[in-house]
Image (cartoon, rainbow, N blue to C red; front, side, top):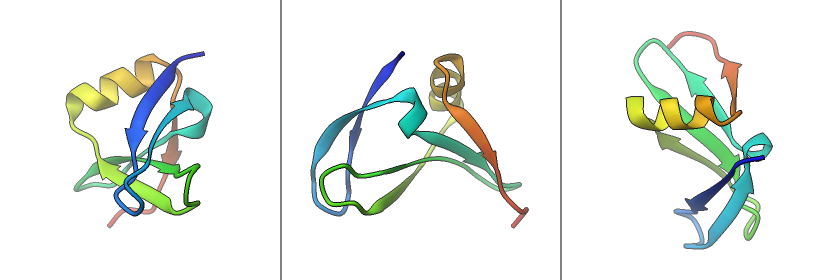
Length: 69
């Protein structure tokens, strides 16, 4: 399983998460990845460009469906 290094904008914590702990979501206007910070428990959403999307999907991160915005 792939491990990703992520940072939390809420508490400043840094963590290593497995691909099953990160989700990828798309709307018509944007793509982002999301996870729950293991340090503070806050949900985190960050924008994901094409390179990040390729990296995440190529390493087992699931894409969740959202209603169009």
